[in-house]
Image (cartoon, rainbow, N blue to C red; front, side):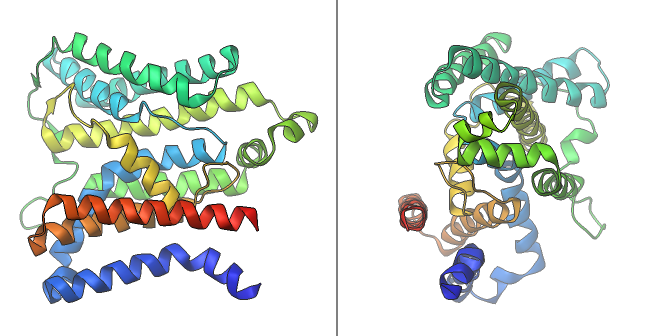
Length: 312
């Protein structure tokens, strides 16, 4: 039992180390060079930020398939605001706010219609993507250059991580503290573990679900801000299918689709595993289908392990 408990706590970390060692041996010592590690950090930032919010949603026992569409909408809103000479700070808050409103809509629909989150967010995924295309008139929107474009870049001659990576780190600490040390966090895990029992204990189910989906969407809006920094335009077609990567990062990191489980540290390591596979395959010259097979196999193994662990 002790060995099993230890494996539960350290399984994702061991998987991260194993994948890093394998690709380090295949690619060479340059795989662990500081520049390459920074590249992996930048590659992980967008998925990791959205996955922080998805960690809360999955711990609640829910799911959100509209993440990719929210990121696209955020980039469009930011670009439109910048073109109207709005300050970069206001544009950033506008993009995050647009995503948060979408999350609020998801939460209200889920609690009021009492339908499973999968169906609701599948529908809003299409609605939000359509709204992004409508606002952008189905084209990419060019925006003036501001400091927002440098959030994932290190200025020449400067040492250290770019501002976008520090933003992810701060958000990760805040979300971890929220889940671990607050009443709200306890309510999230209580609902995910047994919603009926949580209701009998006086947990405000509807309010908590609406708050979770709104908070998750706001974090997704920050991911959209980082996406805008990366591509420097508002693109309504960006991040198609990214919700699968976000969900996969949480599941690989130990989150359970049945709810009641999930940690920020595990999610970050899950996103790191996916980034290592992607960059390692690219630097080794392997085809993209190899990367997809490896990622898919890891996801299936993680879900199967969680199923066995839950059954026991």
